[in-house]
Structures are given as structure tokens and as C-alpha cells.
Length: 315
Image (cartoon, rainbow, N blue to C red; front, side):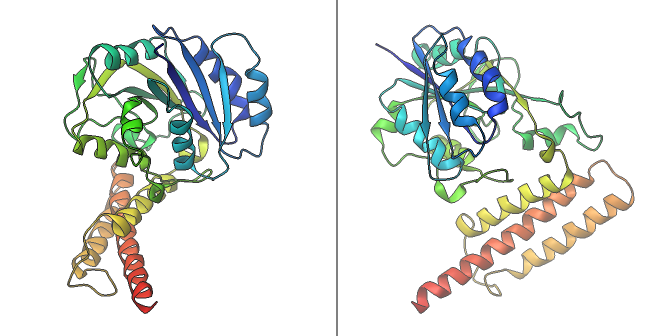
């Protein structure tokens, strides 16, 4: 019998779980489905709340606790728990699914031949309001996804879909036990950064896995207050640059302790540009500061990789 697992990983959000699980149970689905909650060592009442919700009527709720801290171990635990299912659908614990999400995901994978499918993520500011400085081009950094009203096959990185709202054909993971979320891009607790879902997306593209954008797959993303400040966006970009410097960009022959001189010039130029925008109160100030933070992060990542290589040679 074809079976779907509707999963979310959760950390310290016990107060949201009643509403979230109710909305997940209310989904219409053409095949039987279960809900899977991965509790990632939450210190609040998450586990007790989930165990209580598991006793309620409706599609079954299965609970697993992942003791390795971070979103990557939690996501990989969800894959392990659902490995014998046919479809795995991820959303996040700070989201709410719209009606029709599972129907569209099943249609994409069972009828259209997709092995992965994702849809829209709508940033919802009802709880805390939208800051005046937050321009539309920043919403993507709060996980917003909107590639238009029509479905299409995803061919390149210009139209990404994330684990905030995504379905996988589980044969992907059964056929390749090494295809998992990358631990180098782990994010623990309430912090900026991560990126393991972006790496998974790029890996599937490189493997030419059929991926489908289905606009009927929709979730609301309720953004927490701590993310609605400029420092969050700067930290996000610094840490993204840090990971790229450590793990992705090539080592440069002409460098000082791993850092190429041209990157230092870039950092200074982008910093001065951000300062000029701030002094003239331009609306793009935050975006310009993010560019600068990203370069500083790359320099830090390259320097750390240089230090690691020297330590490795010394040992």
C-alpha cells in the first residue's frame, strides 16, 4: 500500500504544536498518511505535548526524539524514520499548511513523475508586524518562495524549493544511503544560518533528478521576532560566507593566510558602499551591508580552512 509521511522537525515550540498538528491532520490526501514529529532535545513541554497529541483522533502522529542537536541530524532522522514509506513531505514547525498541499505533492510524484516537488512559502507578519526597512527582496531570506501561479519543471538554481515545503520520492534515499543532508551545514537551536536544504537542492539538480514546482503546495511561515532585525540578516550572510569559504570556494594561490588580497579590497569597497547608503538613508542599506558581511564571512572561512590545513600537515 502506498504511504506518505508528513514530517516536521521541532525545537522548543510546544505552544505551536496543537494548532500545527491539527492543520496537518486536516489535510486531504489521496493515499494514507501519517504525521512524523522529530523532537530535537526540546527543553520545554514539546515531548509531553506530542505524546498527548498522538492519542487524539485522525491520521496517526508518530514521535521520535533525535538526541544529536541541530536541524541536519533531525532531518536525517526523519529520512531514517520514513525510509520504507513512498513519499516524505517536510514542513517546518513555525509554519501552517494550506489545504491541498498533500494532494498536489502526491499528484506531482505519483502522476507527473517528479522525484521532488516544492511549492510556495508565504511569510506571515501577523504576529509581530513587518519592519519598515524590510524590502520585498529580503523576504527570500525568511524562506519565502513564490515562483508564480503555474506549475513547471525546475531546471536550475534560479527557482529553488526548500524543506520549508517540499516532497521527496523516498526511492531517492533508499537507492543511495549517502544522499542525506550535509552535517557541515548544521544549525543548532535558535541561530541564523544553516543551508543544508540548499545543498540538497543543488545536489538533486546536479543529478538531474526530476523536480517539480507546484504552486498549490502552500505554507504560511510565521516569522519569530528575533529574526525581524537587521542583525539577523547580517549574521545569516556572514555565516553563509563562512561556510562557502571553508567548504566550497577553491583555495587561492595568491593569498595571505588563506585570504586573497582581492577579497580584502572587495570587503572594504562593499563596507564603504553600505556606509554611503546608510548615510543617505537608502532603502537598500540592509542589502548592501549583507553583501559586505558575506565577504567577511568568506574571508573568515578561508582563513579557518588555511589553519586547519596547517594543523593537519603538522600532525
